Image 1: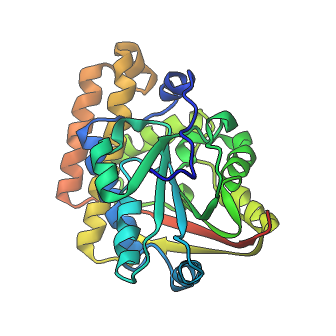
Image 2: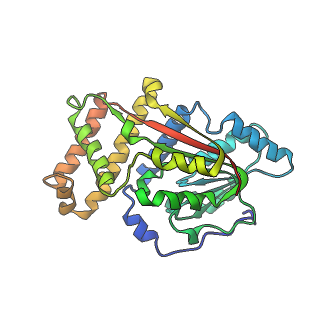
Image 3: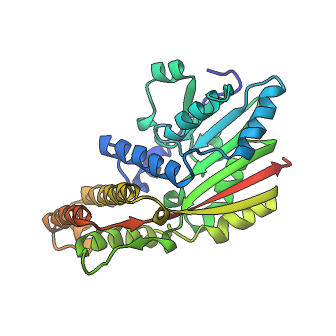
Length: 310
């Protein structure tokens, strides 16, 4: 473990935060996260770091030190392992640290040490959980956190993450634009549509899934000398990739349903179902819709900020 980072403070808010998290933590969830990472990588042209960011890291390496990179909301760390492979092929050996509120998906300590990638617990809303750094990060990456940030929390979460960045560093942030989500014929695939609408309604009811652009765009423009945003849509991918994205969307909406149904029959009725059995049957029929050909194409937006002055 690098001596430049102290472990995040343990805290008692994690269970409370878990109650507000609408996805699960089982093996299916790990598979979904891995698939999500693969689709996102394909969306972004097969690699996660642009030539400009790689050049920034190369210059740091040429100065005589290892570039420092962190991934916030890392889950099992798929993004970090991908960029480690990308950078090592260029003879760049980065220091990689992943942060997440839920360490259940972290690799075992032995695997972290063998792969030289380390994981720490962190709550983006709680500054006290952030590490005390002797050296900050040259790249801070954040992805898909809109399901845990309500409208009034964006500025605070952004500032907390920004505090990890080295002056002159790069911040990268990716979110799904749910207002640009596309679904196949809703009348032909009614069960998939119902489960999808249920998931969106759950998030909206709790103030989540806002259009991220009005929040993130001004924050990047204000805090960086240069900022840019780029959209990527799965409609531009081959059909096989679109089908993988559809499978992934089914998995995430089913996860939300199963998590909510832990509340019993009352929870099923809150979702608009007559019973738990009806809810589960609808989810199963939704899977049949995807097998028949239902597609759910997503658009993601990546914000990149360069030249943070600190």
